[in-house]
Length: 272
Length: 327
Ligand SMILES: [Fe+2]
Ligand SMILES: [Fe+2]
Image (cartoon, rainbow over the protein chains, first blue to last red):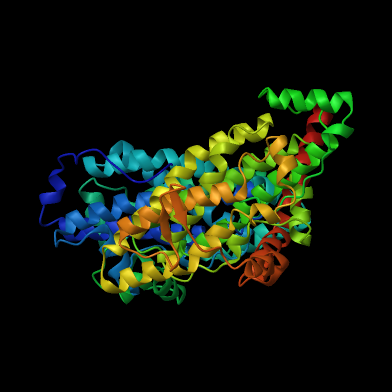
């Protein structure tokens, strides 16, 4: 069994008792955990329906890793919030406008082309983000989670880049499907690099990077892979669609939550 | 048990050639048969049927549990269920690889599954209606699979035996996670306990059917047992399963839906009611509650994935051509 989330005893972290920092830190942790939760949910929808047995296994494994990361991020978010909520309560008992995930990850899974291109665009950012956090975050707890997640996400990124290159430069149809997915998803990518006051606060405390600072490295990686895949970088605005990190979502998120939270809502207070 | 009613083709001992007799003698001595060695055609064909059906069961078996991943009630349960379903896909992979050593490709076996020429276990044609079914499936379905697979670790065909050894390591985790769900629910709110009881009511007889029809109606058992492809009779395994499962149900405070169930001191086992075999044969024929959905889901996944597989092969050909040109 792999990836079931478990960490050692908690490290001392002065940020957890910094009252002034707490609201922004909590908000930022929800952004991390909600994005991995919702992408994990979308990825898990493929279970048993993949195009090849190897993909069924890889997609289940990716979803499992992402749910594991969610347990860490939302677990820490709950601690930082300090109101006695648990990671499960954050995941299962908040409504859509309290979710802080990127819009990119809540879009429907689409065909395998959309699923892979989405994962590629997200992983390219996720990897840079975790890499920075693991090396530089002023929060020992954040560094610890990021270091663990980074190992798994490095593997996700490697796998997905390879698939995007092979399918982009595969048949006419596989090329067309990937290009369509790229065009459709591109307007959602800018959200990963658009900072707000929360980002400024956590960046100021040295917890996380300024989102915009990751952009050049992301662009370089994306361009390199797209070129090898014979795909064309869209010329549309990358930041046309955003707001998920502030709780303004697409229509899709409500349905995800209706499904995901069903048991917790139907049987309040039960233990599972 | 994931292999039911496997048709076995053998030669009666008195009609065996010296080569066949020598082969049987090796099996009788407990030797393992390896892929490159001579084997009777009937042995090879029977194994392909059985390993293939077992592999298909692992793959189709992802669906009833996959049905609840997005609705799992906690992050931990979700992660555990994902890990389990991922294992099942892995089991499919080991088994298709074992079948490949007998000269049949994974694609050929898929083709036969999709056309209905090959079956998967009857159990996966039952729906999973509540979260308690994730408990019942792990506890009873993986539990029944273990009954069959543990002895198959000693089966005569080397690659099959090795696949079983790897699979059995993971199956006990599957059964434990199922039992843990049942335990939590049986000790939970009244609604949860009712849900757990309902799941047991629905899965008890389908689980008993997993072992296949009674020995007296099982025409192919004898040859498969001589070849050590089948290690125990259907009735032996079913009895063993009931003996182990009834006390577990009692521990949960749930009742097995069988009024005739009683401990028989003399045979040191439970007397229990047979499942409705007419229902079993209907499910095998395709008339179970989910046969159509399960097969359609697999066929759709395969058909809609064609462009993906073709894209990867086309790229591999281009890359190979580019390497050739560079040399
Ligand atoms: Fe299995
Ligand atoms: Fe299993």
